Amino acid sequence: MHIPPPASALNGIANVRLPAWLLPGNWPVKNGEPVTADMRFQAGKISSLMPAGPSQDDLWNVHGTLALPGLIEPHAHLDKTFTLARSRPAKPGLLAAIETLHQDRQHWTAADLRRRAGKGLAWAAANGVTRLRTHIDWFDVVPPLAWLELAGMAPADITLERVALVPLSFFADAEAADRIACAVAQSGKDCLLGGFIHSSNWDPAAMTNLMRSASRWQLNLDLHIDEELSPVAHGLSWLARYLSDNELSEHAFSGHICCSHGCALASGSDQQAQDVLSLVAAQRVTLIALPMTNLLLQDAVTGRTPRQRGITLIKEAQASGIPLLLGCDNVQDAFCPAGSYDPLDTLSCALFALQLENVFDQQSRLICDIAALTGDIQPDLPLAPGSDASLVLFPGSDSITWPLHSPARLVIRHGRLTHQRTWNQELSHES
Ligand SMILES: [Zn+2]
Image (cartoon, rainbow, N blue to C red; front, side):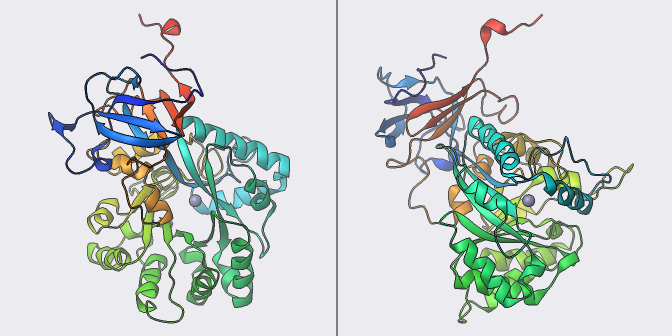
């Protein structure tokens, strides 16, 4: 494929293959697949999107290459990333990883944080990520150094969101809960309140303070919730009932909530799960599954093959109409020794762990649905005319192969090619 010079403004793309989920309902289909599209760009925006027509010389013909809107990394930990070489956990499982990272904090200077987080952001951008949400651990009611350092780190091509990851016990005191929420609210837009909610620290009074403070400061939430296999984990079921019981009260929460993990949903009975999912579906809640770290950290015992997958109930949640996303969670730290900041790797993992079908045409939405992340209603489909001309192309792949065997990447931001990772024919050798 001919590739235009980097950074030059493109008139548009001809013959691009987009997934069925982001095309209008009346889009023509051939042999069971949506026909390719011609897109025109103007001033960094999409000005038209049409079924591919006769050859148009001023457009870049990509000959049926697959493409998606800019990818999302909805759940990362840039404060912890790339610490594995100096801090390896002695035992498997979630709690041992928490202890190991706690010890690693002595190295978290401004320079150390910037070096590691910058590497994560650069990897993500090259993979086509245009929006990344990182959780940042808080150790007190005032923002930690990482919260302040990461604030100014977003490269031009990534929107960086920060979530204050606060232990639930800090919210036990209503005044402390309010100080934390106030500090997050004053940190600017793209900042959210979060917490680690688990059977080991369960406290419904602290949860109530967390919800009321978030409401008072008009913050959206992103909670680490029920990252465990206990069938009686309280977090998600409590939250679903709190939201539905308080809908009309003075404490009603009107923001959007992402619930990350939700592993325990897969441990109880089908009826138990359905009851919670029905309540969740009636609220502004998105579930974020983190298949890589759940497979690694749940049911983890030295010398024993894990029996349970530990991943939340994606298919049942989809059937209930709950918005869903997939995230990478930890990358190369005590929680997860691997990871790449490539949402395609996360989706490949989910394909097998969750037995996903129709991955490109339907499930690719799980790694690029911005409305699911922010909770903002989007009036149009992501690549409708008027939208930002930001796309990721996957040269050499096809709708059956993808997301496997698809490392090549061409990233377009605001109508210009910004990153390319292509197969170098001159260096290739097969014998
Ligand atoms: Zn996490």
